[in-house]
Length: 140
Image 1 (cartoon, rainbow, N blue to C red):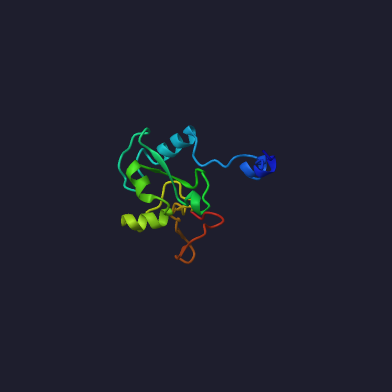
Image 2 (cartoon, rainbow, N blue to C red):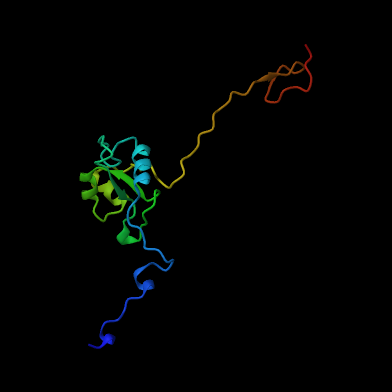
């Protein structure tokens, strides 16, 4: 039998260019972190789930170029994971009827609200008007 009929697969054909196989799932520790970050609930329907029932869904599916990272993953129950299929997160949430729902691990930065501090109003002794800046010396 001629060996040229059966081309030998090279390692670079099997593995990704970086030399490693591309991972498609999260590890056990990452799943636990995702589970506790979602407060033990499905991020789509809000149902309380057990760690053993948890599935890690993707915001951008692997078939559309999504990676298995914490930023791209969501905590889902089995039912919601099956319903999502290959839809991205935004499309899936529209199907579920929830328009303004963000995942816990959303990549968008949340707005930080600065605490409003009350500014002390200073009364100028000479003019009797309120000023925002304190006087350099006190004339009591």
